[in-house]
Length: 97
Image 1 (cartoon, one colour):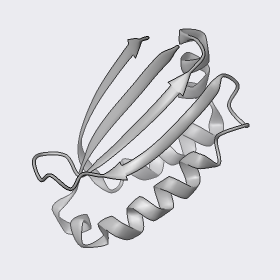
Image 2 (tube, rainbow, N blue to C red):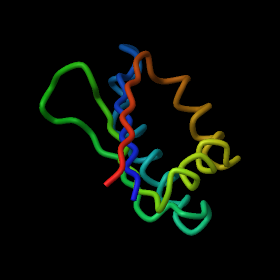
Image 3 (cartoon, rainbow, N blue to C red):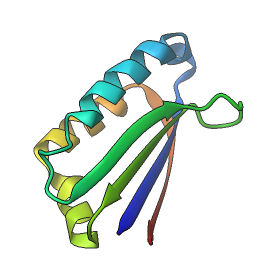
Image 4 (cartoon, rainbow, N blue to C red):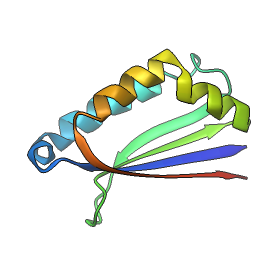
C-alpha cells in the first residue's frame, strides 16, 4: 500500500473562502474513488491547529504504479489545476506501508 499526503497553504486572499474551498475539494476528490484504478481511500481536511498549512489531502493506493496513474489521470489533473489558483504553498510526502 502507498500513502500520499499533500499539505497546502491557501493564498492570503483565499483564506476567507477556506470552508468553501474545502467543501469543493472534498466533493471533487471523493468523486475520484471508483474512477482512478488502485485508489482505495481519499480525504481532504482543514488544519485546525494553526501553522503554515491550511488544508491536507490524504490518499491510499494499492501500488506505486496506481499512484503514478492517479498523477496523470485527467480528473485529478483538472482538480490540481484549480488548486494552483488558490494556494501559495505545497508540500508532499509519499510512503509505502
